[in-house]
Amino acid sequence: ISDSNLIDWLNFIVFLNAWNLSSHELVHPDRNERRPIIWNILDSLLEKYISEKVRSMEPQLCSPWSDIQLLMQLVTEPLAWHGLVIQSCLRSCLPSSKKKKKSGSSYQSSSNMAHAITDSVQQLSLVLEDVMKWISEWNKRPEDENSEGILSLLRKDGHTEGPGRVFHILETFISSMSNADVGDRIYHSLKSWSPADVARKMMTGKLKVLMEFSTICESKLKLLQSLKQQIAHV
Picture (cartoon, one colour):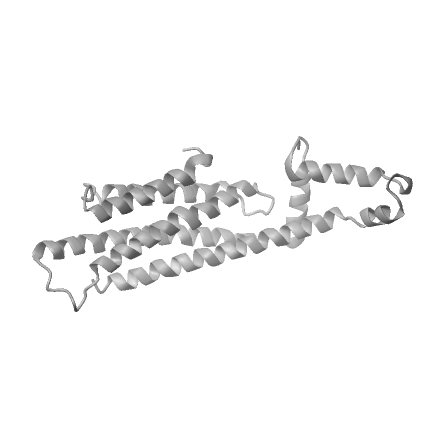
């Protein structure tokens, strides 16, 4: 699956799995798993693509931001939706004083669902823990090293578009401009422009986004842990 279609396909599988579970069709566990086949495939795909993104990116602020954005989207869309589906499944098999005593088949169905939820929660929790560990590595690098990495990326040869292109145009123009070209007020304003300041501001912005992402991952992990505790009562 290409990156451009990955989120759409995973979201589709999430809702296909939810539809199968709600329709009580095609939900028999895989031969070697306790989860329904589509559920098992979905968990495996989420683990595969999230883990691949984490392993493919060095914990550096100069890493391609498009890959980081895709990683964030994987967690905040398909994984988050899947978590809500799992939460709904758990509610359906929790004991209720208003319900009559379950028959043998109903009890077996609830037991199978509980096992499926437990396996899924465990697998997804490990994935989120890996993401949070990966994010924590970003804060270990010195500020100067991060700034230099961003500047190096922006100044890299071959930039024909994007931030590097804009940065190159500004740096070239400012280094060669004169007071007569742009006027005194604009000249002094542009002369105060600093590549190092730009790199620091980019670094600060990226770190802020990553810390917010870490908070989101933590909240998803807490939800999964609470589901794990609740499933013990089934």
